[in-house]
Length: 142
Ligand SMILES: Nc1nc2c(ncn2[C@@H]2O[C@H](COP(=O)(O)OP(=O)(O)OP(=O)(O)O)[C@@H](O)[C@H]2O)c(=O)[nH]1
Ligand SMILES: [Mg+2]
Image (cartoon, rainbow, N blue to C red; front, side, top):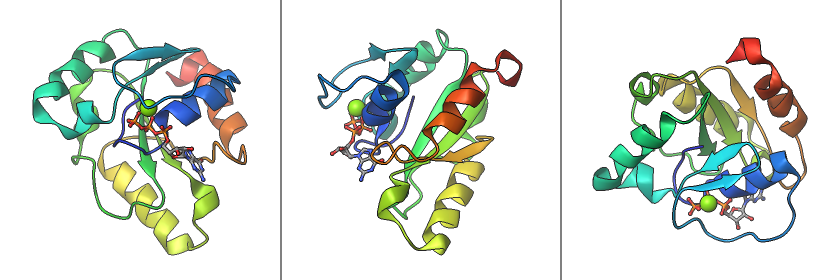
């Protein structure tokens, strides 16, 4: 799982694993259920970026997350190509956004990163979580 700091990686990993306790801001690469959770800084700071590509080697697929409330483009275009793994996208915190235009902007931003398919999820309400989980559990999808 990769994405900007605060975009909801840890919260989503916990929701996917049905873990309710022990939340903290991510300081290093951590395993939560079937996910490898990474700190947002690894994507944001160039010197750390290599750690993401190395960590990706241990994954079946990469999940790039984008906060629906964060309209700015924060993911380098076509970043998906560098991981050598299937790359899936998820727009997070959809419970906080009622404007469909903002949501589709977020989906477009993720698409430009090369991720596909793209899911819309809320770890707070549970919206979209089962759909994402189902997709991740299909080996043919990866
Ligand atoms: N409303 C709402 N808040 C969310 C959702 N997902 C995460 N949050 C909140 O967003 C904040 C940041 O979430 P984290 O899961 O820590 O984000 P992160 O991407 O792991 O951040 P780093 O570990 O710093 O990289 C927390 O206060 C969460 O409660 C969501 O779906 N809806
Ligand atoms: Mg985190």
